[in-house]
Length: 163
Image (cartoon, rainbow, N blue to C red; front, top):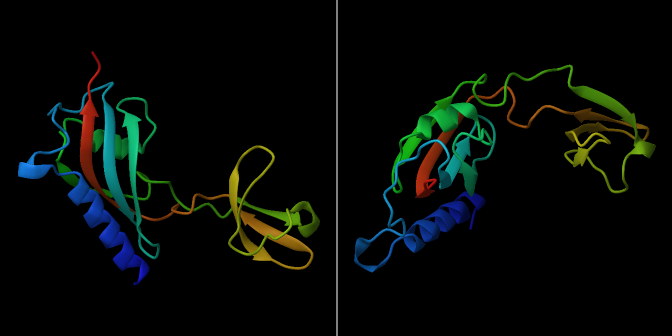
């Protein structure tokens, strides 16, 4: 089974598990997303030239822990609602910056590092090894989706509003 088929099967199983007999939704409460709502949602992010990412996550509306454009778009949604959000490069992870590259000696890298490895520097910044020779490596500190417009498909699973 191909990876994309496995992902589709996983999503189908997840969506089937979200329904109770008689067509009732697990989301009994039909609260609308407002400032301070704890939101559980299923999302799929698609970017040109990159594999899709599918996940379930939680956040609190207004704490700015997700992309601001997505947070804006889902305000007012209720459990069970779905929405597609098209994000520009600026609304997603920003433009790709060629200056966010660094060269380090191979001896400074952990053993077993190869091209494509994901590392953290001493300040906690995440980088991808883009070039590797016997003497040095080039690290790219751009977000992997920088410079790409995104399509985010969202399904609201649960909304818990503040008291």
